[in-house]
Amino acid sequence: MSTRKPLIAGNWKMNLNHLEAIALVQKLAFALNDKDFDKVDVAVLPPFTDLRSVQTLVDGDKLRIVYGSQDLSRHDAGAYTGEISGAMLAKLGCTFVTIGHSERRQYHHEDDDLVNAKVQAAYRHSLTPILCVGETLEIRQAQNQTGHCEAQLEAAMRGISEEQAKSIVVAYEPVWAIGTGEVATPQDAQEVCSALRARLAALYTPEVAVGIRILYGGSVKSDNIAGIMAQPDIDGALVGGASLDAGEYVKICRFGE
Ligand code: PEP
Image (tube, rainbow, N blue to C red; front, side, top):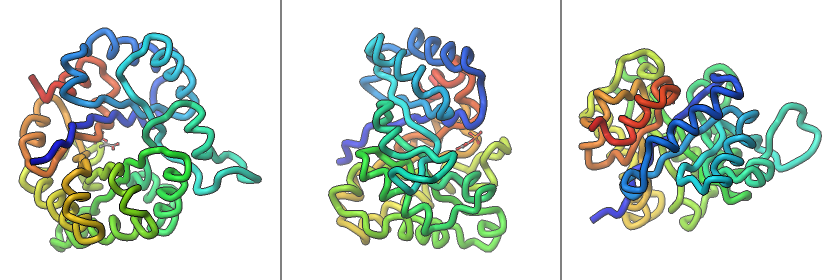
């Protein structure tokens, strides 16, 4: 019997101005109540420049919303112009850090080695990685989606101990479903998430694997979240576009109800 608490995480990407960011967190704080937070962990992943404001709101009002960043540097400090370290994010009270999002892999040429280095950097600063894996349309058409995602997972977890692995969050995000309005069927998403859990069991132990949260991401909305959450190996969602609308995001956090 799994004790995994669902997690809904909102990836704002490079959106919202400063005031809009504050307003969105305030709207979520007004709409979500203790009953919601008892059932689901709710996270927001704003741009770096809004983390301090989100921290102030969360700390000031003791909100149960948690937050994190969309990326981090593989390095801890030094002459790396433009980079943001895990230490800086930890100081800002981040719980999570997204690593290996397909937009970083695609537009910033992040490969499996860099993703692995970033996962290690996150753990050095007690941040919880939300590790993204997912296949392109070509890979899915060649029906190699599970093998591809398992290989990405295995590469990202190199050198990560069993103790560390227990807290990781894995997000299965088929690249062809991100921002396209084309959502994977719950069954297709379950197939890959179940393979990822099996791979975690092989890399660590079945007990570790059964405790790890695996999310689905890719055009999640309030009208498709229920089917996704009904799958046994899916423990929540990484939500992009729909996380920018407070009303829609709250509905997703309530699994469409
Ligand atoms: C994402 O950015 O991780 C994502 C899943 O985006 P969207 O929900 O917009 O497809």
